[in-house]
Image (cartoon, rainbow, N blue to C red; front, side, top):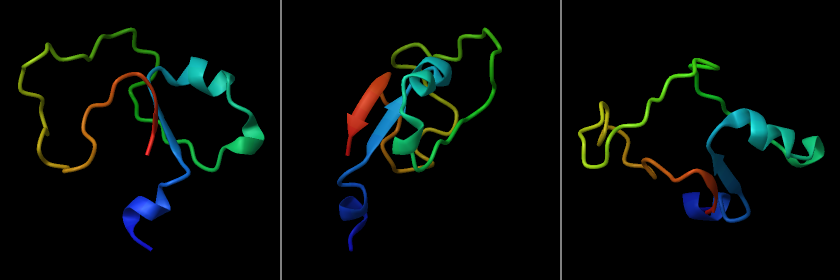
Length: 71
């Protein structure tokens, strides 16, 4: 099975984790990955066109817009 076949029926949610997780049916979730810092009230967004630390290190999907993405 290729990596793309492994993800064919998956949804990736990005954004603030609390509102997203509150709206999920717990029986429908196999994995939740959370990346700290949590509840810091800081804006970690980089300006459009700026160099982001670590960019290019992981050749995956990169920065994704808030919301969901079917893969």
